[in-house]
Image (tube, rainbow, N blue to C red):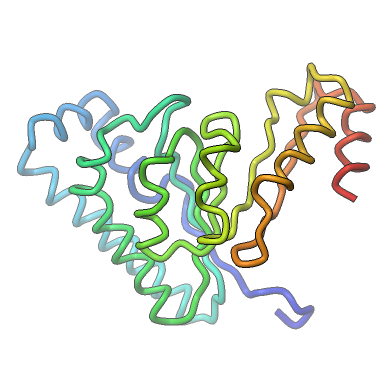
Length: 209
């Protein structure tokens, strides 16, 4: 903070939705939702209360932004219907992010997978910055949200090992052209694993500059 950066905190990755299926097992959790298992509500409340305590502690010690990560989608869809997500999970995010909003704390949310159907809901819940996967959501669809929220785009890391430098430059330029907005803002994230050729890493750096 003394260096001009926001004082930030974070919760463990998978803080809400993923924790529920860690505790129940993924198949059991899906069955709980599908069968409207009454005990599921109690489990959700337990995880929610724990997260609220952590968020309040971060705010108490001076956090100005809090990072949340919860992989809400698969590569092609949400694993549960948007209606079920709104029934069971949206109230949790609204409460957690609402505490941040009330304290003037920025909310950063990372999610792997396809989440297009619920991005407006996440904005409504109080997300300021969202970190989606481009491959699972697509430029054209994500462009519908520019200006509504700051997009911190996870560039296509599956493209980096195999594409030509020119293709990578085109990919990044397309991200800027389609998603940049003064109202919301755009940040780009390029994760390069050991199998990415050096010439491709150089291309990424050149176009980002």
